[in-house]
Image (cartoon, rainbow, N blue to C red):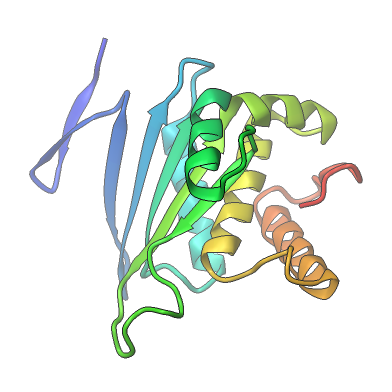
Length: 184
């Protein structure tokens, strides 16, 4: 059964895509979430609410974000195509624009975060988190990459990114911390 709704005169299929346009006092934020896997149900409303809060905490509420949930096969294909790595991974980030873009050009398109549900399920157990908590941790990690954080540049940047990730995660889940086996 497919539920549909009309938001801003746009019909949306909740099973596949769910564009949302939220009005706040100072901005309009769009979060597009796509489920492209058959692994388990994902609470789109919950993910959207958490994404909104993460972007607000990062003073990035004016940005548009796309989130794609896939299986290991889907993320492996993207990882091979865009990073030349023939393996599944937990999260990929694809910024819409970078420092090489035309000077003076501005866009609210932050980018895309792709998360493997299969890998997230495995890692959730290792990190002593629920699946939802693991998905949010991966979403935080992906968003930080979209904003220019990169743990592979240096040890100090890796430390700063982990500290920021854990602070954002702690804002959403007070008193919950990923295990020490988690590098995020």
